[in-house]
Length: 136
Image (tube, rainbow, N blue to C red; front, side, top):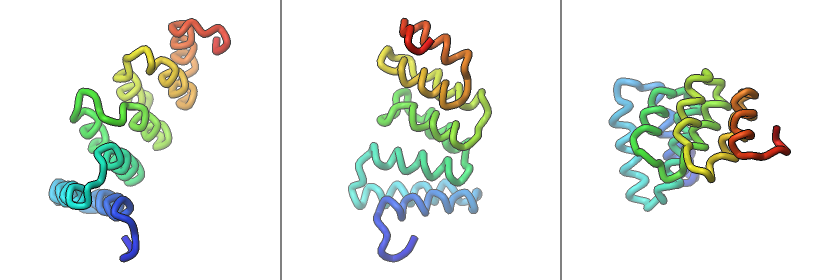
């Protein structure tokens, strides 16, 4: 990261760099966490930065482990699902994240994600569950 960049963009650069150094990735992630703690980066922002960094640098197994590290991530599962969709991941990978969105409030988000991913049959099933005739 350039000398005048923000803490967030510096952490993003550090996490992306881990993709080029898989053997020392664990240490690099720890350094990024230390930096976030030192500069008091809010937890939610750090989660969004990690999702972005892992998806943009193609660290899909790391992203999946990160998503599974908590039963309910502070940012929810939607950012993970969107990252998988935009990253051109398989339907199985996308469904892993969408299936973890189980609350009633998540129904509309699930529908939107199915549409975004082009999973029309599942989107239709979700619309029926929601009882939303407009979407059917």
